[in-house]
Image (cartoon, rainbow, N blue to C red; front, side):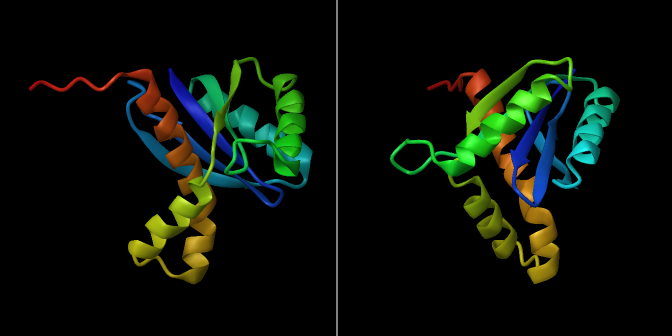
Length: 142
């Protein structure tokens, strides 16, 4: 079983998936946010084909920790998604994931148009990796 991450946006929804051991996140794709019924159908299909047991949805927060207009849109998305899929949903702080994804791709010399196409799924992968890292406490000897 895997964990799916969604980075919800008004234009695209970035998607990432964990490996079966839930240790590594990998970017999967982006889904156009509209038409919305098609977006939901694609998410349902990804849940089924990837044997997903949990969906993590990025919850945007302001730098001071407060919630803004984007968070309200994500809450609406979560409410509809909850009635669409049969797996549990969990929101996760996504502050700066898109900024980090953009920087990561720029430093990797991914050029303009290609970078724009990859930023959403890369942000979803960063979001998911943050969640996965929180599941297993680091164990260091020394």
